[in-house]
Image (tube, rainbow, N blue to C red; front, side):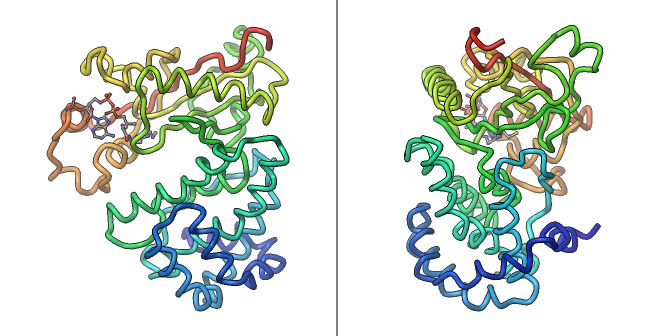
Length: 332
Ligand SMILES: CC(C)(COP(=O)(O)OP(=O)(O)OC[C@H]1O[C@@H](n2cnc3c(N)ncnc32)[C@H](O)[C@@H]1OP(=O)(O)O)[C@@H](O)C(=O)NCCC(=O)NCCS
């Protein structure tokens, strides 16, 4: 289905009640965007266009309906996360709509997390994902917008936290949209036991752009995440952290050598022999270019050279799946 139509369908139940969000005073939107760390220029640009864009017949209802739906869906981690392309070809409304959704939903999200006992630095770091995606959009296109805007869905739904260098996303194996796939077969998970079974809760690990993957940063990240997440999202059974990424392709380990921070991250996980075939993601994350630019790309770093060689000789990359035990041995 055409993605904009799919977005309209996604918000169809909440579009009416969501209209109330559109009456939020622009000063409130601007002060939230400042708190979220957007530059003064970007805050002014977004604020100047707010009154017109919320009246836009396509994007006004989408902004209100999406804000309402994501606030409603907090805690419902198995609600679908649609992976839409960005709507930049629709002009400034298509570029900015996720900025408004995040701004409108932020005050209640901050309250939600404070009530759960999460410290302010983690709340702020998590929500500054918007600023990072605005930065990537600017690097790619030179305009204000949100790269991969759909990534704001788990953030606003309060199921993804950024702690230290990494993001941790609450999910159910085999059920939630971003659960690792392919995963173990049912007969294997029965043998592996709690933590691995269909429906077991796990934490999907994600690596933000520019993350510090040094050994000390990762040690601190996992230590703090274990401490915080045990309070905010207490484990009911053994809980894995899973990672499915272009960074888990075992060939990186062979080619990059032990000093590579990506290889260091990889070694913390049990890398399985399950992977998805991937070209789009690796080209995006390693070149920040669409896959159609592949023939003209030049490898400037060792990872870029390896990715290009592999894609040109084998036509594909591996989004391999890894796991590690997240909670301490006291959780079975
Ligand atoms: C996370 C990140 C900062 C790690 O980079 P790093 O700390 O430099 O990692 P390494 O130490 O393993 O780097 C080894 C080499 O690969 C290069 N490299 C690493 N990640 C790269 C990337 N995403 N794009 C291009 N080159 C990269 C490094 O510059 C270095 O090059 P050199 O050997 O020529 O000096 C980087 O990969 C990044 O920003 N990625 C984007 C986010 C992402 O991919 N998330 C996962 C989504 S599934």
